[in-house]
Amino acid sequence: MRTTAKLEERLARPGAGLVEDLGGLDGDIMILGAGGKLGPSLVRLALNALAAGGGDRRVIAVSRFSEPGLADALREAGATVVPADVADERALRDLPDAANVVFLVGAKFGTQGREHATWFTNAYLPGRVADRFRGARIAALSTGNVYPLVPVTSGGSTEDAPTGPVGDYAMSCLGRERVLTHFSETYGTPMALIRLNYAVELRYGVLVDLAQKILAGEPVDLTTGQVNVVWQGYANEVTLRSLRLAGTPPYVLNVTGPELISVRQAAEALGAALGKEPVFTGEEAPTALLSNASRCHRLFGYPELTPAELIEHTARWVAGGGPLLGKPTKFERRDGRF
Image (tube, rainbow, N blue to C red):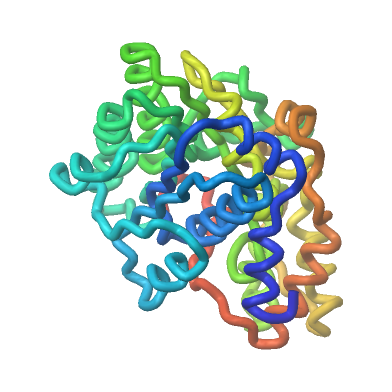
């Protein structure tokens, strides 16, 4: 994974389980929010999985497509591209029908001062989508931020643990889940809710954030001393495969890696690979935002890339000047203000 093309190929490489699961679904797959940071690789992964399984079902990629050239690239890859703003009632109504919908649309950054817009996107809009696609099977992306900070010795919050969101972003994401659950139970729409944190690939994620700070000589804050990370390709696979788990009420699934990652140790490993000593500030707090994804691992196995491998790939990418998405995770924030 030394070039963008190689990285994209790896992210879009389907496993046998995904090919089998998508082969067991009827109808087209629509990706709402296909232009976001997860969307393009998820669209390509779905295309490749369907192609490997045979058949002529469509992958419909829906987004405003603000990134120049992305719509054409996905169209060239085989997707049916529909430029649309799903927040517009008429555009949402005019979307083609699909038997399977993956809902990726969400707002996180810029919440402070625009809380109303965040709640619109994260809580109101999902209800409009659920109403429009009441006859579909829906997998919706949520976040581990719906959980409270927990002791680092706890092993992380399971799907059955009490929620306790901190800040408007996290609260609005729990609102998304509640609204989707309402429509699932009202219409009998099968749904799966994916509580993801933190997905990483070589252009963004916790490891990229740390690597950039180390190279810039900026201090790494250790207050949030433990994190979960997971390879984006695995998260994409699980998101698509969760369509087979969708039910009423919605099936809830934590998606992250099996390891608890020490921020200090990850920074030291990245520093060694980058040839630069990290600078630290703060002390590790006894709590952090942590999820237990053992249910996911029992269902789908472990991610193919380990943290050590991800650190190695990330250091090589960042040191080599590989392109970055410029979307920091802000994982170190503990007040919910993004």
